[in-house]
Length: 378
Image 1 (cartoon, helix red, strand yellow):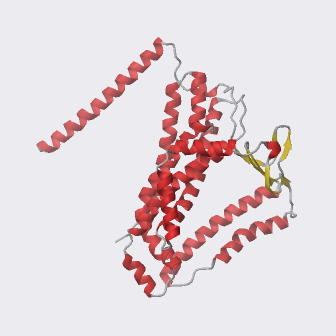
Image 2 (tube, helix red, strand yellow; image 1 turned 90 degrees about the horizontal axis):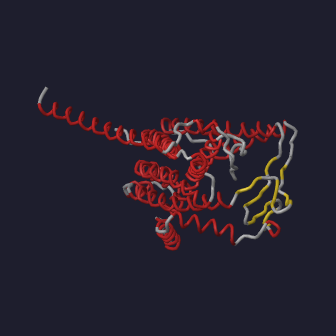
Image 3 (tube, helix red, strand yellow; image 1 turned 135 degrees about the vertical axis):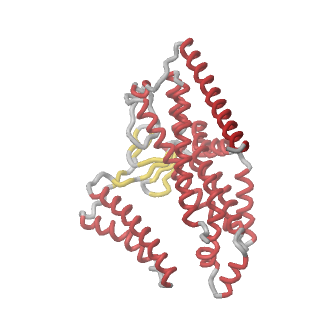
């Protein structure tokens, strides 16, 4: 064993020992302080009755449910915000990023102003702005705006009709999702076959016929039911149908617009990283701008776009914790309420850390897998 390798091993052992020692010091002191103040530790509180209500929930919840179920509501609310926010941010950011490079002077300038304006306003301030916009400028339920029959816009939210309860509706929804997955797999297979054999790819109408035709056929076989649950004004608010609260609307508007501005710059820089000779060669063989962008530029730009795009997706998920500022019940908000009632701050903060680390790792794993699939192989 040479001296360099031995010194490396000794250094690593010393560092690991130091980290373990510091960790034990903080753990021991924390335990001592908790005992002196008679503060209970552990996660037994999760099985106790929560005794508080949650304004918005993906699953059913009441004050009689446990803290564990309350935290699960927070997890699902945060997940809903993250998934919807990421999807819309990518779409809007891509459109704005491409517009920034437009040869149309007005379109390019509008995109540039949007990016510079939104990126330089703190996100929390934007959340306050949109929340105030929805709650202060919109009318009360009795004077609700009714732009479309059955749709009502008030300072308490957007209310709209949804399908009523019928046995065939879940089957239609399941068939729609299944057909979408089948079409996606089929399209990927056909694209691969096209590159190998130069065969043409089925047109979009074929896919649309499958996606909407199968559910329509099931609806017809099921008796063509039309049951709608329409919102109705009763007392001081609307009941029935579905609604989007001002808190959720303000949070989504702020997160999507803010993150899309950063994604737009990621897309712009990714497109500009592609050699101009690629575009010139495509134009020389007669391809239009849309086809050049879709088949030549974006596939190559994705290799530069994906890594920073992943960072923006992670940022949106973590920034969703600012929802507590406008009263949306995300995981941080519900965990804070649980901490205030039980006094078990260490466990509550620990759960918050674990959740966001988990979301970040899952997102990173998925995007790293995608990045490996599109990376240039030599």
